[in-house]
Every structure is written in structure tokens, then in C-alpha cells.
Length: 254
Ligand code: OAD
Image (cartoon, rainbow, N blue to C red; front, top):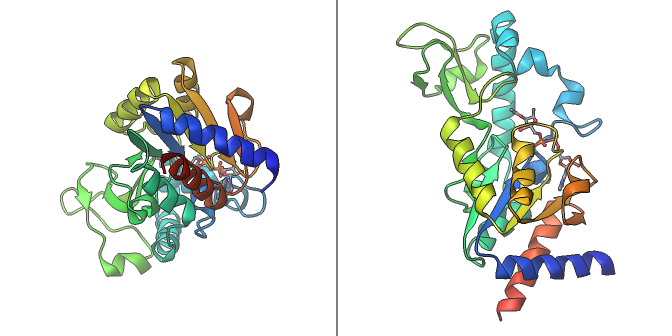
């Protein structure tokens, strides 16, 4: 770690230690070191290899439900074998070191929960949950569904079942978004980790926090759309930076 990064980590640890309320927003970069592909990184990002409109929209699902189903089953299998990385673990531990911490994620995996973070606000849903695309009834995935060439059908209305993730053009879950917005308005420190800051309304949250007086800290391997408007930028992998931030917060307490 270079001297400048070390200095910024010390400053960030100081504001975290003094904060009454901390909010963390994570994106795909937070799971990258667990082997879960991001969306927009050149070469490896999902949307540089696959067509988002065909795989993550109502129109795409209508056109080819089998293709969409198969793609999500493949991604689900990837998430299931992934393990939380040191960044997930550091965020779970950080909750015990600061006054209050709200964790918001755009990720549809459950790696934060598996690292020990309870009550995660999932803005974009969950890849391991399913519901009927027509009537909304919950559906519990059966082993045979994983290899089926078409989505299973709803027991109530015969509509196709889909993953409970937010597709392009769809609304975010209302209660989750409201809770995330309120947390952003009320926090003193807002950490934004591993997101390109391109997808709204999630990308608005750090700006909301900033406009309400919070200090905003970005952790990313490279500058993002948000970097210009944040107070601190820590460039590097979240699996390395977050444990360093946690260690510094802990050393201030001892
Ligand atoms: P993106 O793929 O757009 O951005 C990932 C960000 O993570 C980039 O800014 C990378 O530089 C950064 N990154 C990569 N590896 C990292 C690491 N090890 N540590 C820290 N940062 C790292 O992903 P999101 O911003 O999460 O929506 O994308 C937002 C939404 O777009 C997703 O939730 C998804 C997608 O369409 C839905 O599924 C609705």
C-alpha cells in the first residue's frame, strides 16, 4: 500500500469511528474477488459478453423464456459455489465497530449474508428467489428446474416463473428503496464499494447522502462515474482495502 492510500485509510477510519450512522452501498465489484462476474468491466463483465436486453428484460423473457431461464440457472450455480471474500467479511465485522451501519447492495447474490451481515437491503432482488411473472406468487425452485429448457410454470396461474431480480425497465422493490433512501439521507458517512455508478436509482444514493451532509468514500479498482463527486477515493480491490479500513478502525478503539 502506498503512503497516500495509507493516509486516506487513516482519515476514513477516523470519520467512521466518529460517525453516528454509516451506510454502505455495494455493487458487483464487491463480489468480483469471489469469482462472481461484474457487469461492465471490459472483457469479463457480463454485459460486454451478453445482450442485457435479451437476458434481463420483460421483452427478452417473452421472446425466449428458455434462454433467459438457462442463463439465470447458470449464474445461480456460479453464485452458489462462490464464497464471501475478505471484503464481505470486513463489512460484516465493521457493523460491530461503528455506531450503526446499514448495508445496501445492488448484488443479487447472498455473499454479504453468508459473511454474517444481517438485514441487507437488496435493491435489485435475489438470484436464488423466484416468483410467477404473471401473478407474482412465490415459487420454490425444484432440482429438475435447474436443467429444464423452459422456466417452470406457476402452480396457481400457469404463468412462467422467473428469478426475483429487477430487470431493465422494472421498478425497484418499493420498501427496500424507501429504506435505502432514508438511510442515505440520515447517515454521516456513506461508503460506496465496487459500483460503476451508472445504474439509477442506486447511483443516486451517494449523491443523496452527500446533499444531506454526509462524507462519501469510494472504494473501487478504478475511477467511476461517482469519483468526481465523492470526498475520498480509495483505489484498489475491496477485498484488500476494506480489511485495511477495518483494522484501522479497530486500532483507533484499542
Ligand atoms: P458494474 O459491472 O457496472 O461495475 C462494477 C464496478 O466494480 C466497476 O466500477 C469496477 O471498476 C469495480 N470493481 C471491479 N472489481 C473490483 C474489486 N475487486 N474491488 C472494487 N471494485 C471493483 O456493476 P454495478 O455497478 O454493480 O443490475 O452494476 C449495477 C447494476 O447494473 C447491477 O446491479 C445490475 C447491472 O445491470 C441489475 O441486475 C438490475
